[in-house]
Amino acid sequence: MIHLFIRDDNGLSHLDRALWPSIDRSKLVWVDAVEPSPEDLQFLKDHLGFSETIPEDDIDIDIETSARISDSEDGSIKLRTDFLIGQKQEYDTHPVRLVLQDGILFTLHEAEVGTVRLMRMRCTKRGAWHIDPLDLLIDLLGLDVEHSADALESIYLELRTVSDAVLNERKGTGQDAAQDIALIARQEDLNGTVRRNLMDTRRALSAIARMPRLNKTQAKRAQQILSDIESLDGHTTFIFDKLNFLMDATIGFININQSNVVKIFSVAAVALLPPTLIASIYGMNFENMPELKWDYGYPFSLILMVISVAFPFWYFHRKGWLK
Image (cartoon, rainbow, N blue to C red):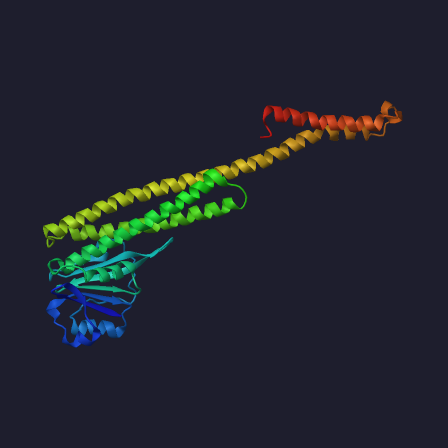
């Protein structure tokens, strides 16, 4: 699907498909292609002068900036960067190709991206004086940073719930400990996804900010977004530290609980050792054992074994070893 936005007296307006044949290319500002078909790409080339070749595998593996962005002598900018998609603890990244060519911004992506969709909604509310393809390019990256900030806020709120459960409620007990570890690992993965997206956006925006074609307003806007990324990057570090603390705390509580279980078995083994010794002695079949012919020998041995069990438990309790 292709969305065309043209400049008019009220800012940007979405052009109906029925009006595409009569489009005034000089008014065209933004072309957004969502899951473009071969016919859509052919339309962009034949009618809108889009000359960028889109590889079959659009997910570039190269991580160098030069492999993701280029500034040609003819004034075109070719950029491939990732945008954060998803919401409510379900985040991922999706590649978007942005091409600024002949005063028109082309965006191509194989799935709907919430940030781009939001920009389409905002475009109709802009004043005509602010309509510029390069402004749109910078603002798209800025919206992606805002989405990353919302994602980090969601991760932190979830961590507060996990923190209360780990430190105040469960403390590594039972099956809940495995659930806590799974939740912490999930938040660590989401935080890593957001941080990687911020790194990719910063790399792209830094390359754009170094271009001499930016005016003072655009350069200032780019620097502000870079400052926001810097602060968010520090926040991801804080979340990583908190995640490590919660993971260590959970594992520590698990070890403490396991130690308590082992301590109980150890105390029970020590407490049962004296009656076992007594039973072993009186289980010997020696003829000259005086208690064998004593009428109270059997009750005496039972009482002696009970005392030998009770005394260690009393002693261990007094020392605090059973707590």
